[in-house]
Length: 296
Length: 336
Image (tube, rainbow over all chains, first blue to last red; front, side, top):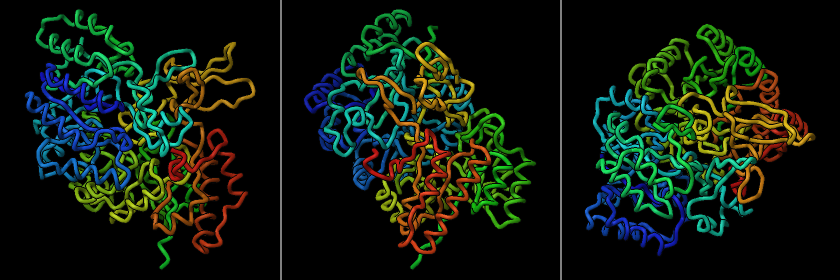
């Protein structure tokens, strides 16, 4: 199985971003997804900056994929979408059907998880339009995945979200701005104060969700490091690790070591837990509520 | 040139609701079958084949349309349930099916090329590139747009597509882009995409405690009410939570969308249809909403410049709104 690093879902400053990717250049990861997928207002890095980072990562032997924004609303969003899909060099991860329209039958692309591929008919259709890899919906279980893969005709690579706070929902409303009593159009870029998002607890203190601008994530970290054999046998070929502000490099190293069986699943879990911003969940993979954790 | 009159599309969770919608001024009703092929998969709701047949007969006899929502994402193991529902729609003479899944659209186009296709709000199409994708691939004739766009954005979208646009006008308000929200399955295992439910009743528990009445979803505390407060259904994005020590409606208040005051603008823009949310609500709700909206649309159509929202309409709709509150939602940009 290959290891992929997902796009940074938070808003970090330019120095942090450049330092982060300089570190990733030497990390044990095969594929790097790059780009702003959450909010058009996060503008410190422009497409050209991402393309520069992409060149450095390619020079370091990584496969680079440019990810498109998930919620495309404005004319400005559409212009950016055109620039990314027409970059002429890097493969693109389509996170909206609008992106698929611009890529279909022109260049190979990656079908992102928000395209909602839940059955083989839809997978085959997108593969026919040029999808060479697909990312399963975050809520898909192992059982559902196996069933889908058994019934498909096409053979795009299968990728699963294997580590990180789960991107669960997208909205027009910015919940970070709302928390700071600001309007979205005047958000003062408050996301920069929350490098791993803003934790939402229940009124009895249970960590429940993470507010990340217009995106809502899980509070718990979806963590499949203990499930590598089960992922492999189900047909998953690429594991996505979602960046966090601290310890991403070590997490990639632990996944690599576990893939190469230098660590048992139990050892890998024990070593990864102190590096996580909150506790693990893996319920989705086991066909349970996403926030459950089943230790196998 | 006067644009086309706006079509009023009302919810029908049952045959009695369908009949009162038709009798009170709906131009079209939308319904679902009694299973997970639609996004209001609740016990006691929706139509058997025979009920649907009677509903279609009733509406068509009065010159009204019937739309069928097949707007969940077919799961591999149940694929035939969705395709059979498409076949049934064609047999029943349904005026259009409302779909979200591309694989299912392809089936519909190949098997029943005469069937009219609408893109469901669950298809998450918020821009013209996405809408035109479905139009070019499957010939969809109408798109229901998620409740996340400002009106100016809807207008921009309409300038760049031939597809008719249907907007939500009234009812429960999804804050998240429909079709891209897994909050419910994260908390309970079941989501709109996979099972056609959000915050499902089977996961809800009410408990009277020393701290007040508590609502829980699969054990997760969604809200807690002081004695004088009205308790609402624990839809998980409408609870009160704690963020950095502050307890508030961190995502959205319990409130209903109401766009009556936007009608002249919607008419000018050329919006083809207005959708009323609420198949899970009873015939009394449908009757009231249909009657008020029929009057409003007719009044606006007769003279948009003189149109005003009557206080009686607002009062009537206020009574049946979630939390007795109403909002313009994302159509009004500062809401965001």
